[in-house]
Image 1 (cartoon, rainbow, N blue to C red):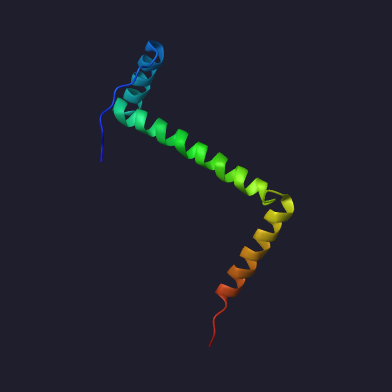
Image 2: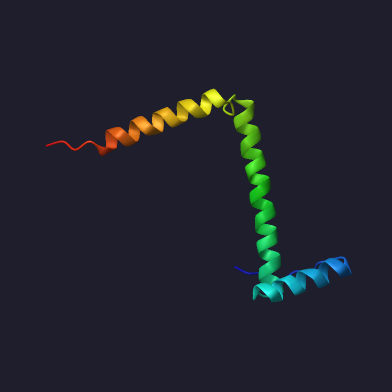
Length: 82
C-alpha cells in the first residue's frame, strides 16, 4: 500500500536528488523510496551484525566452521544413492 507524505528537505539535496532520479530514469518518489529502503536495510544489517558479534559468531574460526559444514552438506547432497 502506498501512502503520501510531506518532507522538509534541504533545497540543494532536493535538487540533486531530483536530478539524479531523472538521470536514472525514475521518479523522485521511486528514488526517495529506494534511498529509504537502503537505509533501513543497512540499519537491519548493523543490528544483525551486532547480534552475531555479541554471540561470538564473527570470528574467523566461526566462519571457517560454517564453511566446513556447508561443504560437507554440499558433498553429502551431491551423493546419489542407487
